[in-house]
Length: 116
Image 1: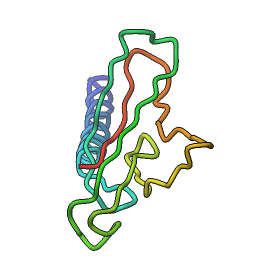
Image 2: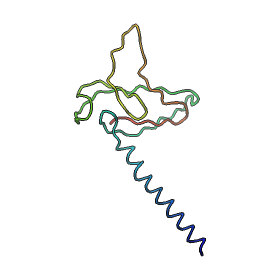
Image 3: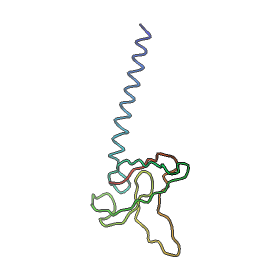
Image 4: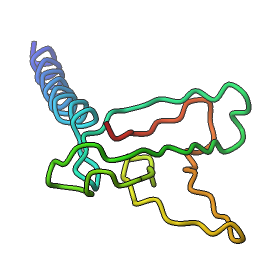
């Protein structure tokens, strides 16, 4: 009988921790903000071509709404990391090109976050 109580107590603690993690981590993915104050959404990219090689993506856009937390409306930005942070797109001279693509890593499934 004492073993059942102990097992029940351990299971209740484990379920409480799992509920806490689910309540805090999962909504924060969909409702997080990036460095410009923009809401973010999770994105999964499946690399079925060559999962052993690094995958590079280029994500860019224009700020179309002023929420008072980020860049001015009309600013051209690109995503700089897998958390969905953005930076102002720099002027790149033609004789010294640079890549603004993001390395999301190797593997069949790649996770990143996009600004809404």
